[in-house]
Length: 157
Image 1 (cartoon, rainbow, N blue to C red):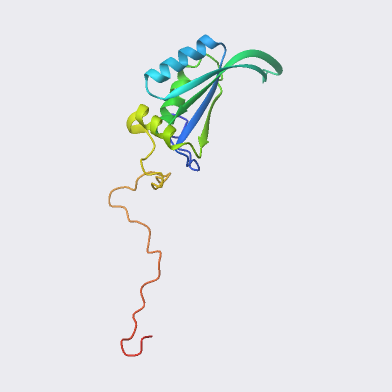
Image 2: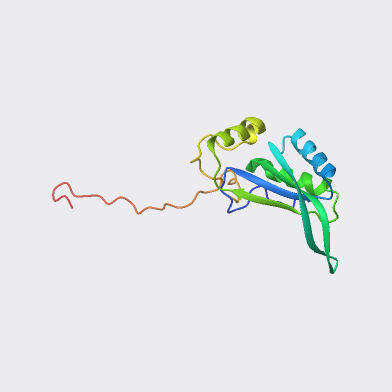
């Protein structure tokens, strides 16, 4: 089982960004090509960055490439697991960001490119329960409203 949950409990947006840094542009492009080929992301941006970070007790400086993958919630778990297992770093930075809003046209693009893993057609669709489906035969929640009070036909009360 992957250490990454498929859907964070508080994430509600229709799309996700997954960020990761790579030691070179070539390594980043290889990762992007593999993720796109597997349809784990619809697109990705590779950005050259100057990084400073703590590593084994001292501050390091490196020229790296930051990759910003754009995907849908149903593909995040597979994308995170893929990046974790194929990443060249000993301790890779793999971060998911929830995107609460996006343009309707871009969401249609994501759905078209990623197939069934796309966002729901109805943006007001109910979010799935984070605990998953109820077992067959399990009881649902109890009644949440008070029972209907009968009124007297004679007095109206």
